[in-house]
Image 1 (spheres, rainbow, N blue to C red):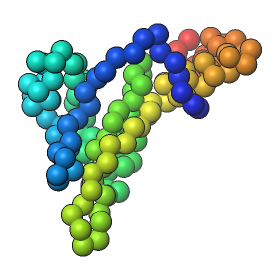
Image 2 (spheres, helix red, strand yellow):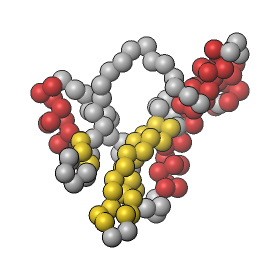
Image 3 (cartoon, rainbow, N blue to C red):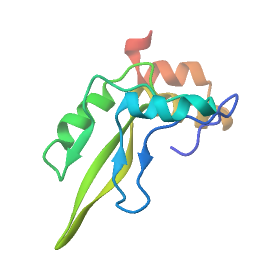
Length: 127
């Protein structure tokens, strides 16, 4: 749907990445301890473990992210096999259906479609 503009900008720490190994540190306690001296907020950790190896939990991750209501989505840490080399980790954004509907309505509003009517048509549960 494109980029949705926000009222303001802010820096939020999602994870830390080791420069040599490429491994991500996702532990909320470790992230908070490192971010606090700089006044950088840490992204809220979902109760759902969003660490995925290969394709074994993608359906579970997608279902959880898509069902989030009132939230943009989540960031999943995906381990990608690399043949003989060590597996690589990637952070992947997964947007919620709520956010996608809001984003699409916002995009259409820029073209003249009434945004609220569009949101309610896409997500009747919000009415």
